[in-house]
Amino acid sequence: MADKATTIGELLAPTVEALGLELLGVEYLPMPGGSLLRVYIDRPGAPAGAEVDGEGVTVDDCEAVSREVSAQLDVEDPISGNYTLEVSSPGLDRPLFAPAHFERFRGQLVKIGLKLPQEGRRRLQGRILGVQGDGVRVDVDGNEFEVAFGNVDRARLVPDWEALGLAPAKKDRPGRRARPGKRKH
Image (tube, rainbow, N blue to C red; front, side):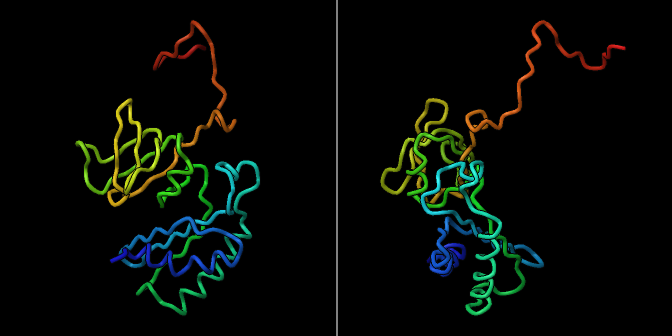
């Protein structure tokens, strides 16, 4: 049986596609007093980092999807009780939901949270080596891990801020060290 997020994603995908966008994935977070439904959209074929270049999802895109999806959810009513709907671009630290997402970003740095520990670890960070069968292979500190997609709780790309030109400038001042508690007057 599919989980709630998968079921809702399958329900909403045609609506998002009708607006000329792609539904990347859905996060459903039940909470006391009201749940959170987060819908990630993208422009089909948009490169990673498109937000920086102005080629990615716009606020108008999010508003249009929010309007249409909200109306559809009111009619279909897949969530009982109160919930908050968020529609978002994937951002630079884009979430990865499907095997195709991992394959698309082969060679990129990724953080993966696991549902169950694997080799004593619940979190992995490394380079995506590729998709194989029902899992993804990741190089973590020179060790190859194969993680079954069913064991992936969350996965996000780790942006290379320097390559994107967004890293803060480094202050190189050779020979000077900061000393805690000491100030020059």
